[in-house]
Image (cartoon, rainbow, N blue to C red):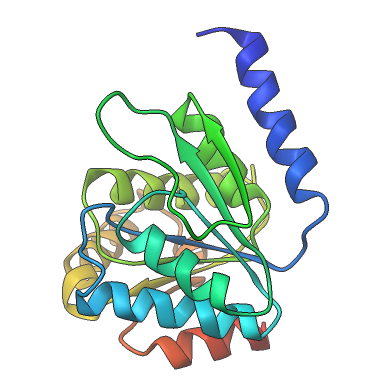
Length: 197
């Protein structure tokens, strides 16, 4: 790892996003088809947020990310992608007003969350799980501001939330940090809660 590259990635993100406020990050699987109900809901979320004056920030790739950016691209605010350079996958999706490509996951994750006022997590695999736990860790350790985290899809996320609750019972996590975690099935409700906060 080259420290100059790390510094450059963090600086590039800061320079890009200092011109944008009211950013909401949307994360989820890169492997979801655009005609899947999850992508249709992500696109709806992007459009609703954009029309309410929120910029939509994603990992810039396909799947849920592309759908959310597509919705934002159709709306009134900026559609922003923080892409990652991978050997065999993930090119920037075509619905981006602004885009940066990162070499390192940790600079990308930190930059996405540091400049956001809320995060919507759609179902996904290891990458999405990694991003969600990173968000919660950054909040718990005060490395980013407290933000509301919305888990879309009760059936998908409930087992994880149950595990979090077990961790709280045995004092491995503080319940204060679970208070900003919402698990919902309604995109309209999520967007309204973000707009009201």
